[in-house]
Length: 367
Image 1: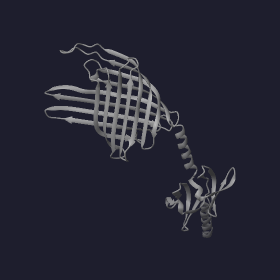
Image 2: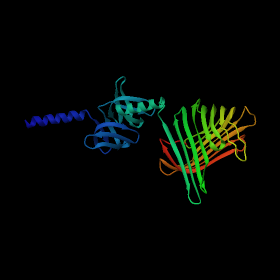
Image 3: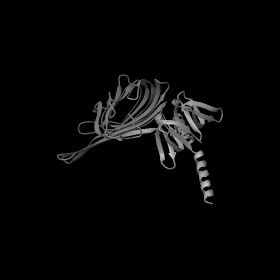
């Protein structure tokens, strides 16, 4: 009876071993389990006793598999089937073409069915991404407080999110600043501006792209209730590397400015509400560079010559330097300038914002 039990257990063990994958190493050791994947550096095999084991690919001398494996070769070919090893070469028994031989040095990737499906799904996702895929972004904050003879609070908030693929880019951005101060018991707001917009870029070729955008702006101290700009045009990638990008662009837009009415004061008369609607050219450039692994600089300049009211124009300039403290945390300094050549009477042509504070990022980060 005992002999029968031992024979049954031995046969069961042999049957399980026959159904498992086997990896032989240079030192003669053999690992039995399930081959999961490998690149040209390591091979992962799941074993019953030792769990997941990673071995150096160079140390592997032979593979025997009971399951289908997907072998990717240096020439881009992929062969699928069970694998045996003979004279240092992998013999793959394929379903369609029969036995195929591949030299070990010619194999760059090995995957089981599950890993190959996950890889194929990822490739398909990259080729046909959903609108919710590949978003990354940043949030810049700044805060300043004073207390004593005068009390003031200045708060700035700037955010940007971008979805970038090989063919297109969608950007959503916004900036806000607010300053409140109290001197001798008199409270007043001295800065209050909000800017934002959406822009889409589509690559026509490796160098040429088209773009469209809509921007919105509010500025209490320009008496600007709303500026809405809708436009688009063409651009050119002058520099496009992992560390540095430089784009130049040109096009046109339609600008609508709604200025509110101003009540009369002791020194100035009342001013009625003013609406301006103009066609504009849109010319500019964007520059982004990574100085090192920790510091980045971004800059954008756009000028809008007015084609409805000749001689009038406006421009926008934004520049930010950010130094990474952690992968998700940086310190940033931002300079922003908005210029309007023909503001309402009594208002200045420039509005400047200089702020500093922390930057929070998610995803891979955006410039």
